[in-house]
Structure formats: C-alpha cells, structure tokens
Length: 290
Image 1: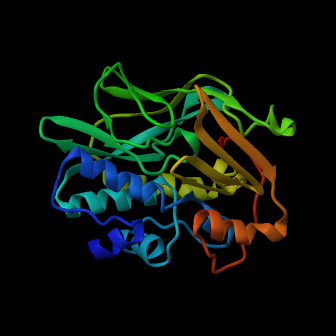
Image 2: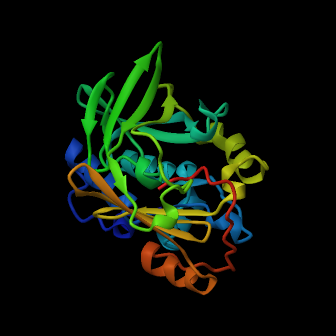
C-alpha cells in the first residue's frame, strides 16, 4: 500500500510532513469529498470487507467508497503513515426513529493527538451529519462548521456528539414531509469512549450490518458524498442534495425520484463510481436522511 497513491486518490498535493491541525483538516476534507460513504457492494452481490489491503484496493485503486468501518480505517492508516498520533475509537450511532443509541459498536472514528490537544476525525458518517473539520475533544463547547454547529459532551467517560442545525427549505412540495428530511434542530449523532480499538473488534458489527434483517444497510442502498457547497445523496432510487447556508440560516434541500435508466449515470457523474456488477437500488427502511 502506497501513501502517494492514497494522496493521488483524494487529490491531496500539499506537504505530508506538517503534522498540524491544518494538515489533518485538509486530508479529512479531501477524503470526504472524493470517497463516498456507500454500501453499494451489498446491493451488487458483493461483500463489504474490512481487511486493510482489500479496503485500499477497493477505495484507492478501484475509486470506490465504503462505510465507516472501511473508510475511517483507511483514514486511520493514512494518518498514522504520515506520522500522526492516532487511534481508532468505537461508536454507537443514534437511531432517530427509536430515540436511542445502537446496542452494538457499529461506528468507527479516529482520535488524533496534536501537541497537548485531542481531536476526533470522521470521514464517513454521510449526509448532513458529516463533520467537515476535526472536532476538539472539549466537553460542552459549540464548534461551528459549514454543515452545522457540532457539540461534544462528556459524561462519566462517554462522549456524546450532537448537532445544532439550520432551518431547511424544500422547493419541491411533494417532499416537504419526506422521511429523508431531518425533523429537529437539535440532532444526536453518536456516542463513543476513548478506549483504543482494533479493526478486529468491528468484525461482528461488519457481519451484522450486512446480514441482519433489521440492518438499515440491508434494507436500503445508500451513497453520499460531500461537495464544496453541501452534500449529495442517492438513497434507494431517490437523489437528494443539501446546499448549506444558501441564505441566512437556511439550507436548500432538493429531492427527486430518479428513473432506473438514470442511476448508472448519476453514480458516475455525482459520485465518481463505476460499478463492475449490476446494482439494484433498494428503497427500504428510510433511516437515512439528507
């Protein structure tokens, strides 16, 4: 595995030797704007593997994406290869329809230490819940970013990541009450501890997410990519985008249903993805939001 090939994949051309917050932020932003958060393998008859060699081949050489257990694993590898002090962390995602955090550790995040400060980086949450900059591990501090205001809160060794969102405008009245829309201003995202994890600790979750009838990934195909202005998503056969702050304290959300014959072109033009096998969009459990 070659770090230069990774840099070429994400379009990063600056110094790999400055181990500061600016470099960390730039690497994070380059990766999240070139590597989609997606589970298309599952709906094309292929598996979602965790092995680093396989992930590198899939994302870097084949120019695909993946879910957090793959995409953030690659980010962790790249940061440590560059010389950053980093660790993988295990997270529990907040499941909005049932108002609770997942019972299993299903999310992978990366902790990075720079000097006397600690940060959490995540390149694979998807949709408008995705951070655009590393978050400093400080409890109770509002950290404004382009997508929203993020806030970390620590209670008895557990950290909680929340988001304070803007208003949203949906010009297509057909979708103003869509389940794809976030409904609240305050949004819980995930919880985690600072215990370092190994990728092997996520093997159970990786299998569960691909096989359980209750897994949102089994029931819904999803592809999400951050842009310079916001985020674009293909959820089942619905294409949705959000433009952050298109006017004061308001995001613009555009949603439409795509025709079957459009899907292949949408994947290529919006997400840079060319699939080797036939993809069957699945419009199931709409726990995903834009």
